[in-house]
Each structure stands twice: as structure tokens, then as C-alpha cells.
Length: 409
Image (cartoon, rainbow, N blue to C red; front, side):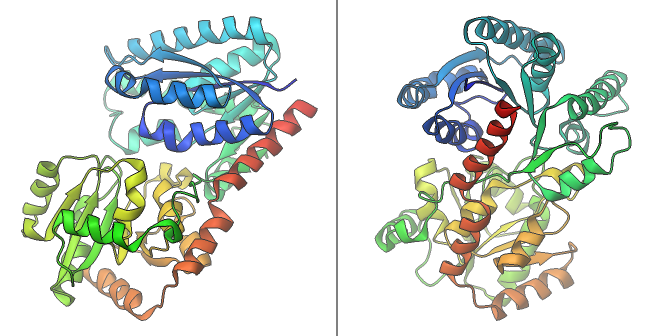
């Protein structure tokens, strides 16, 4: 029996759901697994994207059960959402008798663990990162607030229970796996952990599939000068990304190459990006901002000479795998990033796919600039590294291996 219940608190109409949930489920469906999928959908995105997701689910025979995501009031809304997910999961289990409940992150794991204890179903904890610590490190939960302190304590206790009671755990990074295996509080350590990074669709993110005229057309539409050197940033400039430090790096690079421009491929508004650049006295004539559909990203990113991302190297980031790393490597684009985030720097060094910055100051930036100018990056070699480490098909096979093991048991 290969009936699987997949629970995600991220919506399938969210960009994350479309890049990091559905592609795996579609791939696993093709291998013969029958999925029921529960997700929490944000109203505005659900209206826009519902039809497209329904079409994908129909194509791959996925039984999708979208539930409303509620944000307010804090805490109570999450309790309500968990109750709705649990009721839906119980109803579906009565109909389909699931072999495995695959829980993406901590909120769904509350339901998966409870279902295991009640029904004996296999509980797969796909942790995605140290979620409770991310909330604190990202300043979403202030532990000086007694309510957030209680919630943090609750989820850290649950984290231990998830690790102890899960039939298998998925970690995005080896760094995260090693951290978990060092925890004395997990009684049955070393618990079984499979490392599967945030994989990328290597058919879409393939420099060979990007036509030169597409790149030129995007460049022309944006108004980027013909002879400009282009530094790019791909994604939202949100909680974790160090905008000030990335802009300082750009300033240092521009001092050496005055014809350099910064391209932001981002859902953030042009006004916001221009505001943070102006605060650094960067001429907004040198800053280009484009909101892109997923299928437009390869041609846009291919405008750049290299792509830049700095992520706050907090404790919780040991378990993080930036999706953009595999996507950029697949496009043959070198990366400048910082150390202290998941396995990012080890991957850069292993596949010679860019330069790692260990400190955030002009000396470190200038050393990195000298290094990136010395190294000869070969698109074919970068893509080969991406196929080795981040290929979606390999990720799907690794999940299938875990599923087979659990069903076999």
C-alpha cells in the first residue's frame, strides 16, 4: 500500500509550494505513490493560483485539500489551523488508511506525531530547518515577551519529541544532521536522518536552454547598458538576507569597475529596493529591479556576471539550504556568499562554484573580488556540480528510498 498523506503549512499557491513541495510530490507520484495533500492557503494567492495548482494535481493524480491559512489573532489562529488540519487528516485516514504521514516542518508535525501515536501510521518529519530557533533568530519571536517565551519552550519540547518519535527525519544539510546527532536530550540518538537539500529543476535552470536573444531582450527591456558588468540578487530581501552588507559589497566592486550595475530579481517593490540603495548613497540609475515569473528567472539571472547572497549566520541557519544556490549553479552563474549557513560554503568549495566571504568588511570584500576575478568559472562545470548535488530527480529518488524503507518496515 502506497497511500501517503503530505501535510504542508506552506500553501501550494505560494512560490515556495510551487518550487519546493509540488515538484517532489509530482515526481514521487510518477513512481507509483498515491498522495493526498493538505496545505494552508493564503486567500489572495489562492484566488490567483488555485486553477493552476488544481491542473497540476489533476495531471499527477494528487488529491489536494486546500485549507484557509489564518494569521490573526497570533497563536490562536495557528491553533485553529492545526485543528482544521487534524480533522481533515483524520477524515482522509479513515478513507485511505495512509502508510506514511509526511510532515513538512514543525506545525504539520504536531498532527503527524499525534496520528502516529493514535493510529500507528509512519511519521516522516521533514524538518526544513530549526524552525523555533529561526523565529527567534529572525526576531519574529522576542523571548522578552512572556507569550513568545512560552511558545518557544513549547516548540523546543515538541522538537525533541518529533526527533524521538519520527520513523525518519529529513534534514536539508549535513551541518543540521550533525547538530541533531549531538543533542543529548534526544534519547534514541543517533536518530535516522536523510540529507536532501533544496533541489532545483535542472531542466528549467539550464544555461543551455537559455537563448542569447532572450538575455539580450531582457537586458534591453530593463535598460541595462550593453557593456555593463552585472551583479545580481535573486529572491526576496527579507528577514534573513543582509541587504546592507550586500550593498557594501556592490559598492566595493563598483569602485574597481565603474560600469557595474546591480540587478534585483525579486518580488519586493522597486520603491523599497531604491530606498535601501539610496540609504547607502548608491545611484538608483545603477540599480535595476524586476519582478519575474518562475519561467522568466533563467534568462534574467543569465544577464549577471555573478550572483550575490549574504545570509545572517545565526545558529538556526546550520539547517538551511538556499534554493537559489542550486538554481544559479544550474545556470552556470558563479556565486558570492558567506560562510556559516548550512552546507553552503562547503558546496561552493567542493564544486568551485564561487567565492565565500568569512567576514563582513571592506578587506574581506576586496579579497573576494580579487579571487572572483582570478578564477575562471566554467558554466559546464558549475552545472555539473548542480546536477551532482541539487538535481530534483536525485532528491525524488532519495525521498522514494526513505518511503520504501518505511513501508517495508
